[in-house]
Image 1 (cartoon, one colour):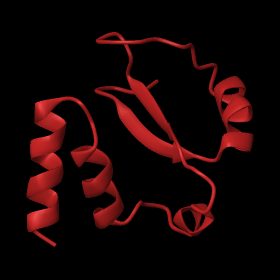
Image 2 (cartoon, one colour):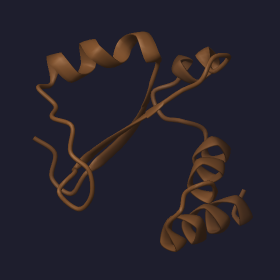
Image 3 (cartoon, one colour):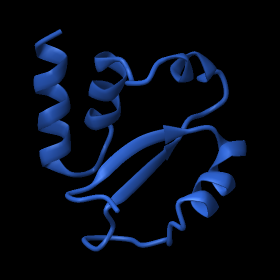
Length: 80
C-alpha cells in the first residue's frame, strides 16, 4: 500500500508484470495513488539507477498539464 502516492518510470515490456505483481488497478484522477510513466525507446539508461536523475524529473514535470507540476519542474530545474 502506498500512503500519499508514488511515481515511477517503467519500460513498456515490464508494465503488465508490475501491474500484476502489485495488484494495481487502472484509476484516473484524484483516487489514483500510484503513477507509472512509460519510458520511451532509448531510455534504458534511466533504469541503471534507483532514482531518476533530477534533470529527467524536472523535464517530466514541466511537460505536464497541471500548473503545480510545471512550477515544481521549473523550480527543480533552476536548482540544478
